[in-house]
Length: 273
Image 1 (cartoon, rainbow, N blue to C red):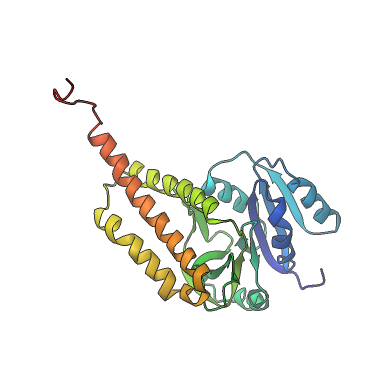
Image 2 (image 1 turned 135 degrees about the vertical axis):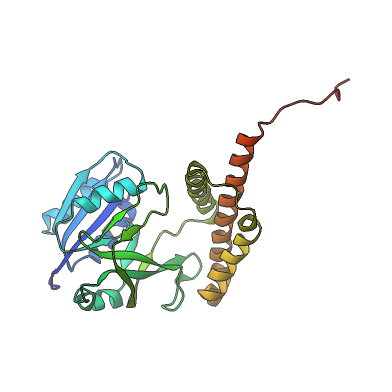
């Protein structure tokens, strides 16, 4: 751990992430502080973190009962003490190129309050996508006090900044969770249910045009605009899985609304003999 320490607090929320967490921590070697908020791991996560602490890593390990995705991340953010805050998940890693550009990002003019970082997934049958093939750019690095989470967001929560946000000129988040599509679909089903319920609770009506067209838009954005087609069949599967999330979300919004507006009735109107 001879890297220059930067005024960054990295924060991670986790539960049962022993399999992934170590490599995440290793890429945070430049951070002066690492906050790990655990919601009740039953695997070896706590023991793993203790080993890092014993080696001198600046880790604070905190238990917090689950508050929801946005609430849990806001809690973790509130524990940070450094001028810059980095949100990272246990299954993500900072690539070498981003670590090299980090010192420059911290010297940004005060009007720039946050940086977005492109995320590159690990595809089964391919590996990490090339530098120019990515899922999206997410706001992950923010000045302390210049952003907070929207607690109404049930899933895909993000930091809401107070000022200008820029894309990092180089580097990526590497997302390493190589699970087969049957498990991934279960995850997309869970997330789409949370997203749909969030939209329904906000009083929004079904978005019928989005139900018809959004899955295609989602697919082509990933496959063509973000260049997943360069990753062969693994890239095709990644784009198709993303479009399925979009379809499930819009279909669930429609059905939830329909169930409220017109409760199903098993009325055969005399059809039974």
